[in-house]
Image (cartoon, rainbow, N blue to C red; front, side, top):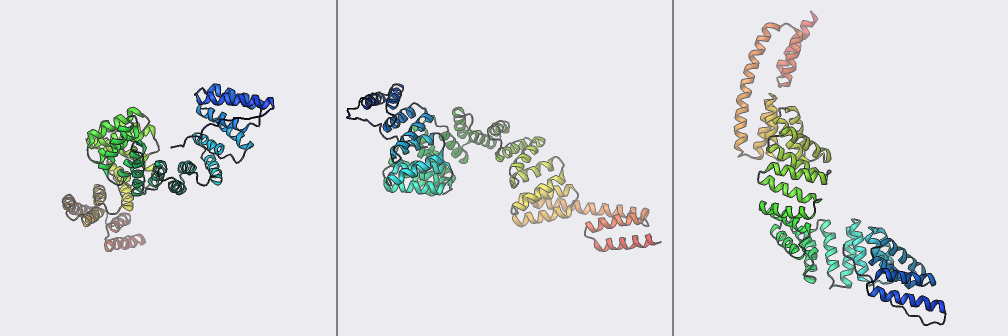
Length: 465
């Protein structure tokens, strides 16, 4: 988050004959000199002496708050700014300084309240619009953040910060083209602004401008060689440009800088997958899962790699976890269905593939795979119907054409064998009502209603005898 600098510490001189006030002033001015010299502990001690002598010395609270902030004592700084505001509620500098300290404490509601108060006192304070816009961004109030950044730009169009912040708001609203324009304006005003180059790289990536993403990522790395996110976005751009080896190198660098970045493990895993190094991919996806166990795509990607190694027993639980986290994860349903087919769980495969087809009815592969499962369950009627649907989507799918021919021949053989079996059974049990009713069920399932009704009628007649 970008923050504006605090207002300058205030030098304070009082001309008075009162000895106590004169002593307080001396301590205050001594504290001011120590503060300017960077001697923060000494400055805080002198400001404290001034406050002890004159508890209404508002500017001493304010300056001590600044010194405590510089000394990383956020709670102390906030307390001092609050005391300064109690003494002088219209002190815009104290309100703004407290807003900045609250921002460092992630108290974004407090930041918004203080900045709103400052804006009422100083309606042309561009910096306060920027700071409030930051807080609204953190609270995912993107519309409010964009409005504040736009106001700041109107008040101070030469400042890069509001362009950057408005770009972030637009980026998070997936308005990538508008975000790119804002980041571009930011880097024009501040050509060494690494954050704007990095953010523009991400926006360009999601606009499928992978060359632009790589270029901006590289510039961000030049400006900030220790920024792990810059290496990650360049890795993403290189992965999407099929430069998998370079992508692996960039993600490795990102991981070296930030071992808790799940995205870097994931994209390196995807790059390994593309290079068919599935064992290395599984290791990376496992690390990504350790960092972000609620991300369904990581389980899917690991399951896919395990499937490619034909380790279906391990792949199925991964796909199941992905589906648990995202019940409408069509790819995970499809891949689990395929894995179940390979482990001869054809009923489970049919169930998964049916759900996947419900979500995505225009993928020929799903019908092909379900046809395979149906056929292995000896349900050639549904298998052939699925292959017809597959060929309707992809008429030139040679694999589906060959499979349809194979299944048709198998269906004819099964019908012939079943006919022979029924004939034998009819000779043996043709006058047994129980046999006739079971055969009627089989006929109905096969769509042979006339034969089913005939068996049912004969069974009923025999039962009445």
